[in-house]
Image 1 (tube, helix red, strand yellow):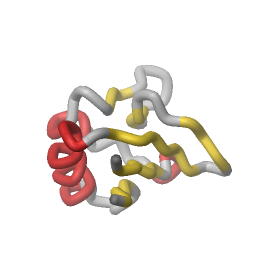
Image 2 (tube, rainbow, N blue to C red):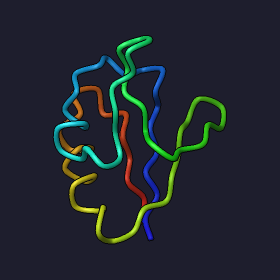
Image 3 (tube, rainbow, N blue to C red):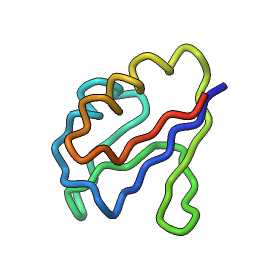
Image 4 (spheres, rainbow, N blue to C red):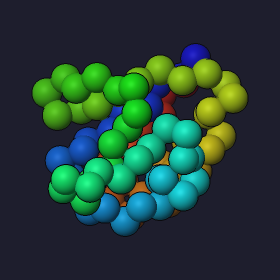
Length: 74
């Protein structure tokens, strides 16, 4: 199991994470920022645990994030 951590407040809405890991990320129509599906918020940090089957695509999403607000903890 790994944990994805996302700082949603700093999101610029580039959509790269959605393109690389569509099963875990969606763009919000309300504010144009991305939503980490299944995540819980704790003081501005959204986090969710994922299995090995989702790990590689989410690592790629974290790599391409231009503002580096996605972290993967294994």
